[in-house]
Length: 255
Image (cartoon, rainbow, N blue to C red; front, side, top):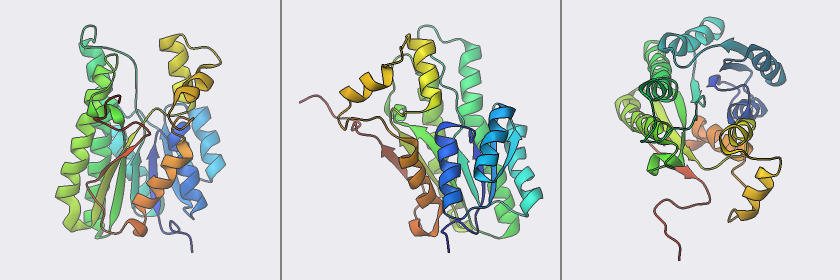
């Protein structure tokens, strides 16, 4: 029996990169009731077909749409037992040039939307009297972040606090909430970001990995395996954890 045969999962940002890798890993462990959410319908429907799930178009910046993903999955399968908040925007802005609009947009997608999706998962699980789990995809930037990631770092730090606060509030309902602080990751989204914001050429990944301590960037499938573990019974009572998933150690200095 697969670890996730009984899982009913919603994965935001599930149409590419880490979100899609999570969906694939859940499917490999037996999950057949899987809702993927994203903004690109063509890409989303292709991803859903790939994992045997369903796609729902949603803007995580709209809290009603974020919470509605849980309702959509519950309407289809009766309940939702797992949520992975992987959707995010990472546009560049610093403390010197960030606009109010950019700040609000990133907090809406990266913190507010995930909060209300988690809230709805918890409400339905409490009403239904069944356990549930949530994994929030965070970033190593919660420890500080580059200067050009001011609103992104702040929004992910906010979601890190949401993770712990919700874990404390929901533990006696047997709803577990954990987070993963991902390091620099090799994804299609990162490729687009490097080209758009940093003028990167076709060799950016090769160059980045050549300078990395372990010779590679973080790979989505590696993080996806941890997500599956955290959402399964294998992780037992683990809740409120923020796991650094990187080859660079927060707080370390050159020796």
